[in-house]
Image 1 (cartoon, one colour):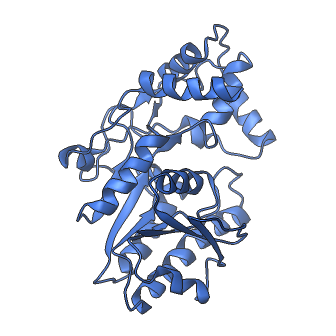
Image 2 (tube, rainbow, N blue to C red):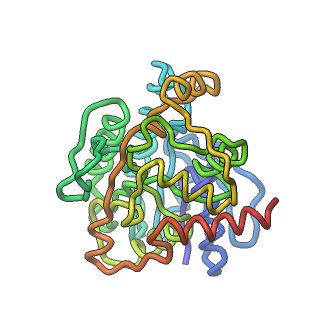
Amino acid sequence: MKIVIAGGSGFLGKALTGYFTNKNIEVTILSRKPQKSSRLVKEVYWDGRTLQDWRHELEGTEALINLSGKSVDCRYTEANKQQIYASRLASTRVLGEAVRQCIHPPKAWLNSSSATIYKGSYDKFMDEQHGEIGHDFSMDVCRKWEAVFNECITPQTRQVALRTSIVLDVTGGALVPLIKLVKAGLGGAMGSGKQFFSWIHVHDFCSVIEWLIQKPVTGVYNVCSPQPVCNSDFMKSLRHSLHVRIALSLPTPLLECGAALIRTETELVLKSRKVYPQRLLDEEFVFEFPDLKTALEDLCQVEAKRS
């Protein structure tokens, strides 16, 4: 079995690469900065925009997973906004063209989107059927990203859009700076603390991807735990797992100043994301870490061994 991961050199790509290679599955990474290949991992150059020799890597593969896109952990300047749009839309278009040109195309194509496509919600669960999609910058990026994906006609390749929530892991992603804040005594509620936080343990994220590759499914899936929590409860659980008692809260004005200093946006922690994986549950996917307590205890044990 062989899997191709476009944009696979980032946090999620590395997690998936480790997950699949541990099962003796070959992984080819399409990267702008390819590293040295190994027995089960091959890295190939691509620019995310143009058809080049990398397209031959798609022939006869089990799945193509597209994770490409400039990180949204930045200030939303006009230049950064254009790069966020372009990196997602261009890579999806060129992958669609490459799949169409394959003699033996991938059996499945899983393309990233984001759970942030939904409007902020404090009461209504946003599932695949009833979730409300908005029109601010982040939501518009996801809408256009999925639109380009849906325009790619691939009769021999199943297409699945991944509306992924925040993936929790101690090796990268959003949990790392949150752990640092808690250890520094700044692990109280952020803003009002009432905003919901949709999340998924990194192991369950990888398991969902494998499950979607194996099942004859298409369309949109929310990739998140079935138990979103409010920010204050999330931070409380994280403090408990890290055995930290001191917890100063971070009001919105202070968060705004901090975000400006580290060149990011407060939306990443202040938007209320109450997303629900209805399709995964209906189709009987089983989460190993469905609740936050067990997820954080597992991850913080890993963090303790790393420290």
